[in-house]
Structures are given as C-alpha cells and as structure tokens.
Image (cartoon, rainbow, N blue to C red; front, side, top):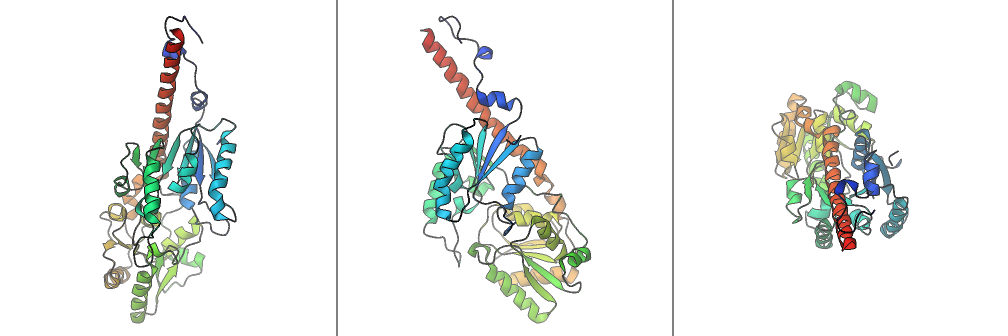
Length: 370
C-alpha cells in the first residue's frame, strides 16, 4: 500500500501516553500524498516527469506514495477544485504527510492542518517568471512573495539550490536538487542510438531539450548559434526535443554531439544532470546550479550568453566528438541518494509533530490533574 488516565495528582509518563494515528502507521510504513499540477500524460510524457521520477524513487525506498494530480480542462479551476480533492484524500485518515510540488500547489496543500505539509520549490516560484528578453513578468513579484510567505507556514521547504534558499528567511529550508534516474539516463553507443531514432549516421547533431516556446529557455540563442555553424558545415543540425518519454530523451542524449542550454534562469535543471549521466558534452549559460553540477567535467562548458561564445565552444566539441566523464560527476544525484535525503526531511517533520503531540497530551493531563 502507497498508500487515560492515571492518578490526577501527576501526569502519565511519556511511554504510556496515547499514541497518535500517524505514529501507529509510521511504525509500519509511511504514507505520503504527493500533490502536483505537473505530471506526465500520453500526449506529453515529459510534462512533470521529474515529479514522477521522484515519486517512483520514494516508492522504491519503501514509502507508500499516493499521487494527486490537479488537472482538468479549465486550468484556473484546478486549484480551487484541488482543495476538495485534498480533503477527500485525507478523509480516510491514512495519509501521514502531504508533499506538494511548486508553491501554487503548496498553497492548496496548506489549506488544511490535519497532516504536515512539505513543499518543493522548483525555480520560477521563488525566482520569478522570465519573459522574452529576460525581463520578469509583472505578476512575478506577487508569486514570489506568496512563495516566501508559504515557506513560513509549511512544515518544511525543499529548494533546488542555495540561491533559492537565500530567498527564504524560514529555518525549515533544505537544499535537495532533483535526482537522476541512472537506469534510464546512461550512455548508449552513438550509432546504435541514432539507428533506433532514425537519425543519420554522418550528421552532427546539437540537442535543444526544452520547449522552444518557453521564453526562459532562450531558444533564439541556440538557433542562432546552430544556424551560424550550419552555414559553414551543412551536416550540423539542431534537434529540438521537448515532448519525448524519458527513455527516448536518453537516446537523443546518446545520439547527439552536444547539448545546447542557453537559459536565462533555472533552479537545478534536470536536463543538465541527465546529459551529464549520458556523458553528453554541454554548452550552457551560468544559471541555477549548472556550474556546480558540471564542475570540472571535460567537454562541458559554462558560457556567457553570447552566440559567438557558443559557436566557438560547440566548434571545439564537434572537432573532437568525444564523450565526457560527466556521469562520474553526478553520482551523488542517484535516485536512492536523493530519496534518502527527502525521506530524512519527512522523518524530521513527523518527529517534530509527534513531539508537539506529546507536549500537548502532557499539558492536557497536567491541567486535568489540577
């Protein structure tokens, strides 16, 4: 499944106090309700795939995970509808803790106080939403302010980077970047991957693994660099991949010669970590934890957002066509290691809740004994 009294003159000792329902269930198996508005669908298997990956990792680690996806035809109604869906899920009394992804969903999760709430912030919910040209949207300041306030009223906040943590003044903040599924994202022989995907063996492929319509991803820079290179060598082609399954994305990472990642802003971009796990060379802007993740991996470069800088580094990569040792640099982001950290947060939250339960019970018994 993922899914009293003593003498009035003195209180009962702690070990004889009534046990809360959550404590009884945890002795068997912790049950966590994961709430999200992003989750893979048949039409878009990449949508919120990182949430699904973490839910599966937690399941493999022994957590009983139940998922509540806030979805529907009318997006604006999904959140108010989610309040009632959440209450329905909690009505049975089997949920120990709610883990919400993104601040918007976290606000819905915190409409109840029956069970503790952990919120994972992913990026723009604390950093703001970027428009074309790099400016922040007008609504960003309100969204960020709501996220900061939310962090003070939940039991724990998980963020992707120290930069994001610095935006919060709460004491319950944990920096835990999302994991990499090493079973899916692993090096495959280039020619074999190309044959599976139907790509030409003699071409040089650059990978842009994001939705080009999302302004923060800065697709125009990637396209300009690729167009410049293609004029010199027609065998160079930019592949845009944004709605593939994780398994096919991993194949593209093995089939291509370099990942082009020119984002304006990021939290801890999963595609960078996945590319590292596939030993794919990377050219990227200095956003989020990219510099920290790439580290000293050969064939991976952190650049200024300049077309000609991207052109120069991509040219070097294509001249040698060597794979990197990136996989060794992201071993610490293995699913098991990250899920262990997330579970440690859950356990700390639940211990604190139990401590409050014990304190309240003792206080009530003291009052009753007077």
